[in-house]
Length: 123
Image (cartoon, rainbow, N blue to C red; front, side, top):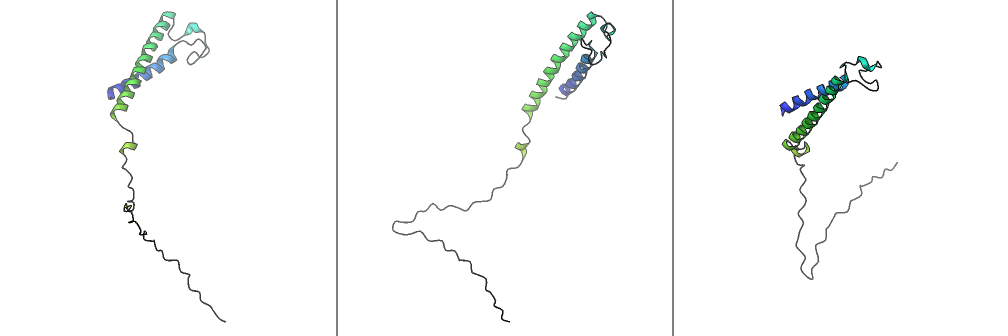
């Protein structure tokens, strides 16, 4: 995978350089608004060679992109998958017993809140 990564970076740099070195029809990047006869690569034969090499570099760049995507997606899982599971508090057990016929279920008795004693102050 390291080889594919290094190849990908090198192809990206070569592709950027090839695109910038090509003769621009609309006075773009390295054309700098000059005439097309003074282009960096010169005659149309060199321009055709540059465009072919750019096409091959683009295809190689796309192949390395797909290769890196395949290697990284099949070899690892999500970061979230490696997190520990949250601890859930234990719930109170639920009684599955039903009261016998004719009896009533025990009533829950709760103590009523008592009012705080008040002191009466006499003056």
